[in-house]
Length: 358
Image 1 (cartoon, one colour):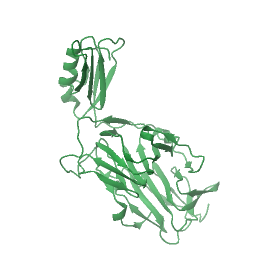
Image 2: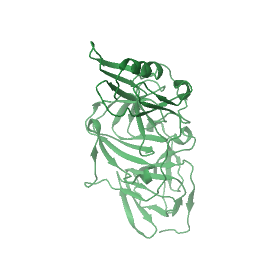
Image 3: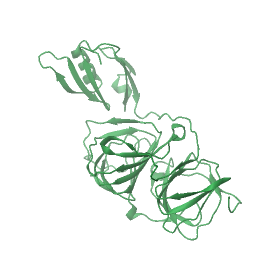
Image 4: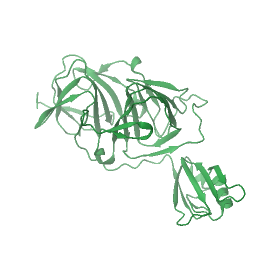
């Protein structure tokens, strides 16, 4: 950012706004300064020209930071807007649609940072409301991650294959997330990925699809205190371990599920379950009235029947989104079938229809 005088600008950003001075140079006649804070890195440049711009800073207490003012002007002319980090996340209008993502040789994978491969499971994003990613990390070892957090409504990670070592704010020492395990990442919780196995794969679901990620350069993890019940914007952290899970009835007869504990931790905002065949599953025609219903086939196969449409075979790695009101039935389930179900809200209505088949 252009800054004709460094000293008053540094005093403002460091003393009043709480930024940290990382670098200043040259020593004999400082002309550049790099600061960090509020998840941002700023460069003040005495030789730069042009508009000073606008910064929107998310703070736990904007009134305290701004001494009662929510709009400030820095000595270099930059406009500062202070907003609450606990403010409601903006949600784009929901546009429900049926989505089918096939895992085969034609599946498209993008390459992200650190060599991670991303497969988009909901290309249309349901109007920008949801994102679902199948993430594959071919080469394991230390992950070049940093302490960060997300401003988000909902986010969960299910470990599909392999393992990762993670650490979360106020949740104790680092732990290993194994295949079948899941974590709920509440809004604003600081966390870091430390290392992972070769060929690790996870399924990550987030709402909204586009959300802000901030670095926290000051917090050191693990936290010195253990606070497992800490509230993060109305949610608490969840670490579900598959090896300790119990199974119970699912919403459709003939199946059973293990509940991953996310409904209770989010006050019913979202529910996540792993579903499998229990005994003699029947082709019951049903529909739902929820905001979002997603399924990812973990193993085995089944056939999805929909009203007036050809049957759709689903195999390991395939994913679907079922919009509300769509009549469907699950048939031809193999005995080893397991699939991940993610629903918002957690408690939605399942209507059963008289048709025995579609």
